[in-house]
Structures are given as structure tokens and as C-alpha cells.
Image 1 (cartoon, helix red, strand yellow):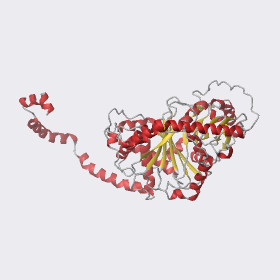
Image 2 (cartoon, one colour):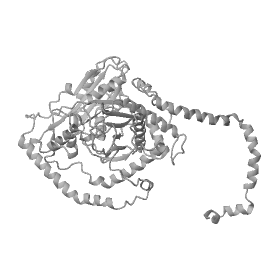
Image 3 (tube, helix red, strand yellow):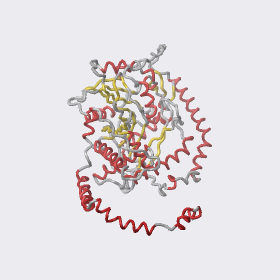
Image 4 (cartoon, one colour):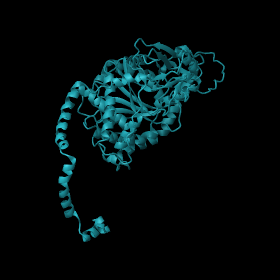
Length: 565
């Protein structure tokens, strides 16, 4: 028996039919050359031999009497692998868009809480001949970084796999669930421990809160000095900030990791800042299409990991910061710099509180209360009236920098599929994998019916930032531009074709600018280079004679006193 922390349980209590609280991923797999078997059966056998490597696959919930406290995790010794690993065949022609739409439908359904809270789907029928793997696991069991650790249990570094030691045999328990008295006793004991922990941390929490009134010692650095003087308590309202339904829409896009790193180094910002800048540019274009772009900058809710290095516990250890997306700034480079400033300021504040942020807190009588409030807020429409704290959720997870295999098939992509919530109908999660930055966009279908347009704008914004690295001076320590990335996998070629320029109105606006620029440059090109150089030569010599210092002046310029002056 293992108690859920207060943060883990919150994902259970806030879950409603309109707001499922599970996370997942979409992987497209290359089957081994000459493969003739049944991959679904192979995948089932593969998972059956691996589920003991991660607790999330073998534990289920045991609810407390009257929901007076958080549930506990208990071992399930009767796992139905046919239920957890399922098979789907796409209708013809099996396009990439069909695959993403099907994943959106699968992601909109709740996970059965009476079983271990995970589901895998093997999807074939793709026109590329590849096979897809869609996974979903309840957020009560893992956060983004813990999900990477779970991935290590089911993925291999070689197509041949690795030898996995079978689990030790254990005697089966007699009862399907724990007894009421046992659960009640465990609940009281755990609640008491939580209150003791909170009492011990009270002085540290008070010091952290009091520290906000004092100036930070590091406030003299550039980031703090450039921080905005005004702090907007709420984000501007947009069409993304509404109550959501249980219907989802999904899009996946891929950007080069090397190019993203190059942009970050060139402009002297972080990799995460470039991700936020790319999302900001895409949303700016998307909202401007329908004249919805607010005058105030959009705000992103960005999860921040609280996990210590080497911690592989399958639970949630994260908090969230608010970062301005600076969508009120037209210039992409200046917008990126403003995002960097806002991000650094938020991270600085988070560091001061990190040691006292609780991921486990007393929740006696909270389950039924939180669930009732979540249901009321979602269905009453009050979210449509209250000002939002953030307009969009943006998360960046560091994944494997090398190729991985699932049941002998090569994993070609790793698109995250996260959570859309009331008031934040769009979630953009990015995971790096084998030289790629895979963007997964999940949203409420009613609020964001055209999510593919946002995906296309993401790619267009990235290309714009790459082009601007050639026009703007590089920051100190910047490196040369990376080589072009390899050709996309067959299933991604369709995605690349979808990267059309902006809409027609945007194209019309840009065309005259190019024409004017061409006219301005034309006269300069008509003048022969040698003739122009010959005409300027005498003038340069005369200027050089006038500017040449006398011997005494040269000595004075070389002296230390002159340099100091």
C-alpha cells in the first residue's frame, strides 16, 4: 500500500468527463525489414514481459471510505493484458491526419479506475506501411519526467532488445480490495503525518513568503534589471480561455533540435525560451487571422520540475510558473528577448520558493469537495466569465538523444499528448528525441477546431527565427548554423506538405514589401563594381591623408594616459 501525495491525488479529484487527466504519447514505428508477423500479438507479449519494470503498470487505486482522504496504490495481481494493449486498424487511405484525429478521440475517454490506469494502442493501416503506438497513463501516477523513466522500461536501445529478468513469483492476495477498517486506519495515519510535515515546514514557508518583500541579491543582473515594472495579475481573455467539452483535436509537428539550439545560442537565450518564442509567434498569427489578438501579451503556464537529479520515482514533482509570451511585440527577435526576461524573472522567484513547495499536503475531506467544485466550475460556465491566469499551457520535456526500439520496431517520433483544461483549451507539449523536437498540440475541438493551422504556424515561426539568425549579430559564444536535417520519415512527408505559407491575406501583405525592396536594390546593382571602386579611390586617399595622425599624435594615442582619457 502506498499513499498518493496531495499533488498526485489532485489530478484524480479534478478529473471530470469533460477534462480527463491522463497524459500520453504518439510514436510512429518502422517495422523490421522483411517483417511478416503479427505486430499486435508481438507487442502484447512484449508488454507482458515488461510491465513489472515500472510500478505504474501493476498498481491500481483503492478508494477510502466516503472519499474522506486520498486513495492508495495497491498491487494488482490479476492484470488483463488484452484489455491494456489493444489493436486498431485505420480506414483507408490511412493518412497522418487520420491517425492524429483517431488519437484525439482515444485521448478524450476516461481511464477505468478499477484497473491499473494505463492503456496502449497498436494502430496499423497507415499508408506509409508503418505502425503507430499510442499510449496513455493517468497523470496521478506520473509527471513528464517520470514518464521518460517509464519509457526506459518499455523501450530498448537495439532492435534485438535486451534480456529482462522475469518478476519473482508472489502469493496472490485473497481480497480484491483492502478492508474498510484497514483503509480508514491508513488514511488517519497518513493525514496525521502530513499535518506533522506541514507544521515542521511552517517556519521555512514563512521565511520564504517574507523574503518576497526584500530585494533579491541578484536583482542587479541583466534579467532582473530588464524585468517589466508592471505585473499583470491576469492574462487577457481569448477564444482559448473557455470551458471545454470532452472532444479533442490533436496535431503533431517536428522541428530540428540542432536548429533550435542554434537559435538559442545565437540570440543568447535558453532552449525553452525558443520553444516559447515559437509558440508565441504561432499564436500571434493564429489569433490575428480572426482579429482576436489582444493588446496585452498572452501568458503561458509553464510546468517546472521540482525533481532532484537521479530521482526516478513514478509520481508528480512539479510546479508552474507564468511567463509572458510578449505577443504585443511585432519583431520576433525582440519578442524572444522579452520572453527570456520574463522567464528568468519567474524562474528566479520559483528558486526562492522551491525548497518549501509542497507536493504532499493534508487533504482530509478534500476528495469529494474538490471533485464537486471541479464539476460545478466546468459545467456552470463561470470559466467563461473569470479572467484567466494563463492563456496556454506550454511544457518542454527532455527525452532520449538516441534512437529507441519498441518490440523490435524503430521509434521514429515521440509526440507528447497532454491535457486540455477548463480555461486553457490548448496545451502545447514538446519532447526532444534523437535530434528532433516533437511538438504535440492537444485542444478542445470546439474551442480550437483548426489546430493544424497553429501547427503550421509553429513551423513557419521556426523558419523565420532561423532566417533571422543570418541577419542579426550573434551573441557571445554562438556557433555556426547546423547542417540541414535528414529527410522526414515516410509518414511525416504528408506533414511537411501541409506546411503552407500563412493564409492568403498574409501573403498579399508581404508581396508589396518584397516588390519595394527589389526596386530599391535595382539601381545599386546596375552600377559596375570596378567603376564604383575607381571613383571612390581618390576620395578615400584624400580622407586617409587628413585622418592620418602626426608622429606626436600617434605617440600620445599609444600612451596609457590617452587610453584612460
